[in-house]
Image (cartoon, rainbow over all chains, first blue to last red; front, side, top):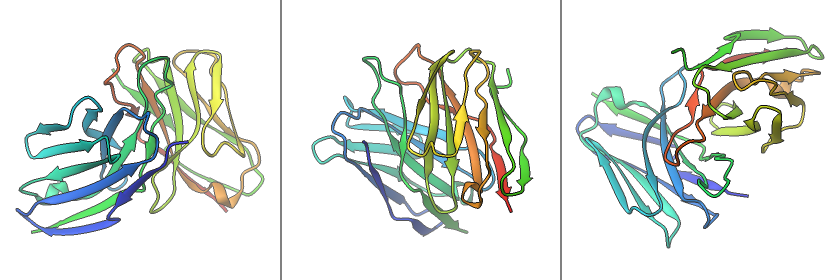
Length: 115
Length: 114
């Protein structure tokens, strides 16, 4: 089955700096890669996602890049703010063609933005 | 439109007791999932369902059972609670209509087994 590795497990940055979280996946058939943000005691919430036919996607301060050949994808947060502090999870899935849309998650990255 | 609703929010069980974690969604989603989240770990899939009457095992199904008699409800049953099942349980659902749609999560059930 799919295996998703996520690094680093913890990341501390100063407010205004950029943060980068990296994930690798094992199943070359995976074609959908969402990122979830989970604040303490809350539910995971989707912040951005990318399909395998796209190399990069941006939404304001958040961007995701995908390298299909190397089977890795990354989350980039620019101009970090204290409210960006949370646990971030990457995930991989196969969508389309009778898929069951199961997600395989990485273990998460605890991002702390220091004021 | 409540989304995905889980009950209870918190529960303490004794070893060997049984209980059912409830999950219901009002978005008419075909796909539903149960995950457990242990400290410092990602979410691991327990069971999932692609529609009423159809369920299948995920990565960590041992010690759990599910049923899907309606589109809306997907309860998770623990028959003989064990300390290893202490975790936060999340239910999620997803539409079958479009490819680039996320899974929507409930608020979770925090379960402690003592």
